[in-house]
Length: 211
Image 1 (cartoon, rainbow, N blue to C red):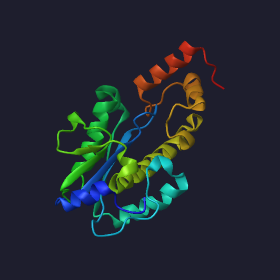
Image 2: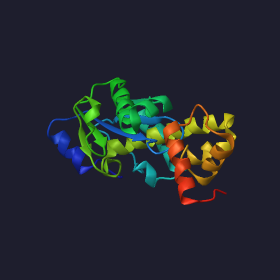
Image 3: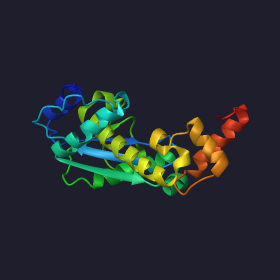
């Protein structure tokens, strides 16, 4: 993404200068929190070359870009919802909670909040949703990169204590190695119980063998 998106340029023309881009990572994994990031990038500064949807970038590219985004941002903040909150609220409610926490922790007030995906009625604050926003909006892409890098770092650190689940490689997602470790060693306090129970049932129902 070599420049600010047309969406953001039009919004600034309409009077919104400080636009907070918001994205979350970790909706689907079996382990670890869901993490959201809110980022306000300076409106009069050119976009950082190479910023794109975090899923389209390599880990090395994300790790290079994340500190540049944090350094250049007018404000940025993280919010998370724990595995216990995910089990209690379901993933939609926990995602809304993580996003709300990130927005409320911003050190500068945003004129407008742009969120990747569809509107979140549980959010409890005014926002605009952009489907595919992490690939279409510069500020949302910045948020997706920062959130992804920091969540991956967290899972890698947890993997030191729980190496058999390979979280440093799979970020908590339900890979074959991860599910095999679940069947052998069971759940840790960092696992989402409902997600894991469902994943293990699915493996059993299909008769799949896990290497």
